[in-house]
Length: 119
Image (cartoon, rainbow, N blue to C red; front, side, top):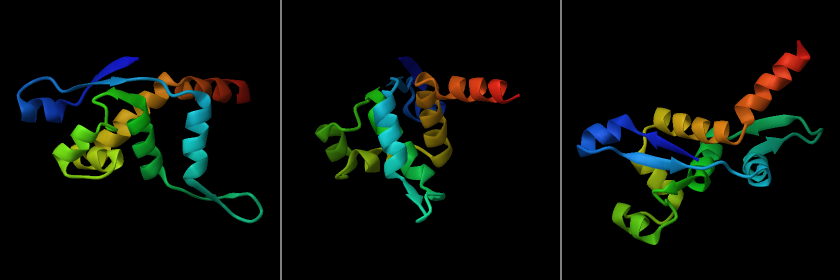
């Protein structure tokens, strides 16, 4: 787990806006990626929806605030946790938060290991 501060929101709210981030299990991370990837008939990657992957990673990898909370969705006047995330954060913030969660999953370390083995 990791505490992560969104400085823009801390400044805007006048108090520290911290999130509690957790690693996703490998199966969930794979499902999120697979569900948001389109393939050609030959099996090559046709399109990857990184925006939706980021949204799902944030919703599932953040325990505080709980974006799945009905109270939070009501407060923002939305129907899904993804809409809360979209309203709350700027695109670059969403990318940074999702990257922090994937680091907790060991994805960055695995990519570095793969690169070292390749070389």
